[in-house]
Image (cartoon, rainbow, N blue to C red; front, side):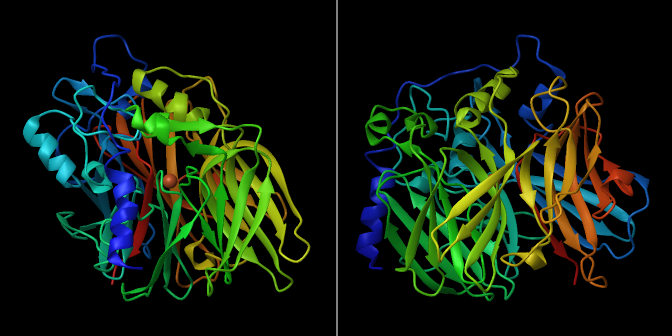
Length: 494
Ligand SMILES: [Fe+2]
């Protein structure tokens, strides 16, 4: 791709479409908030210095490495507060597992947005869901990059990930912010999603959507971190797509009928409010040949929305199977995620694991939607793109307790059996990731965070992945709550 072409493509994302406009302006504090609202406030300090977690239980001897997590954390600055959960600047946490102890520290990702707004002591750039009335126009997507969705160790680097613009380099030890990542000179500033897929051979696949331009950017990056290929494909529209999946032969995208309306963008609405829900249209399924990106197949599922796909694989007869967390509409992202910031439990159509079977030969596709309310699907990373049996998700079993999940669930996607652990009504469970044990073929640990809203403390739990119901084998506590986050990944020591 020529540099000029890319600059044009990014120009569509940056100049005319990201105008400031009339937005919301919520103030922190004031009214009485439910206990769980502590998950949507700022952390106790701008930098959380190294602290050893208070432990119960015993950490497995073979568990040595670092668990990294990211999520929106600066929700308030000066007298301003964002009105959407997805807006706040990203804070990256590192939990170092060593010698039977866990040490934690955390820092904000110091993007230009973070640094300049800190100096001004005010949010003054458009965000995903909030645009203050005096917001400055931005020239390119990275000017509003909050680096707040995911953090991924890759090729001796640590990447803080957003989805509308670049990844950001962090120091894996100190979490100090480095440079914006440019995979090549031509790709500088191109959107790079927060959900790359690392193939079994170490190849990293990713995509980016250029809002308003109807462009889907694809990336293939060698295990060394060197860009092999990148290309922008034309889509007819700009659906909101947050995640994708790989099989050993294909890339799989779900394109919800929740699409950007450039006119709304031009009127100064926030990015999310510039989307429209077309509930009488199907959700598109786009399957792209990994080796030849011009070979594409389209399928349709009933109208729906999703953030996440757990995994996908295909057999020798051209049948692809994958799971995704299906929502009947986009109410969570448009309404409920705002309610959380106000301390309101706005009812929404919750996510449910859907299992899809797609036949490339016959063109048939069908899905089964399961009953549990789930989110944050993860699998053993050694099974990415390959046949898998076990899917790990958060689960909501107590809708009266608070608006989010209170447990974790392991599902055997072949037999249908499940096993779960409930943290109790006073705890919000977050994403839990599978950490392989090198000695055993399919064994491993499930590690993740949770927020104890009653005690106002954050938790880190370690489960035997095949014995969730037994409860955590070890659990550490921070003496303060940290904001609820999104995603994390493990890097083994050595
Ligand atoms: Fe995500």
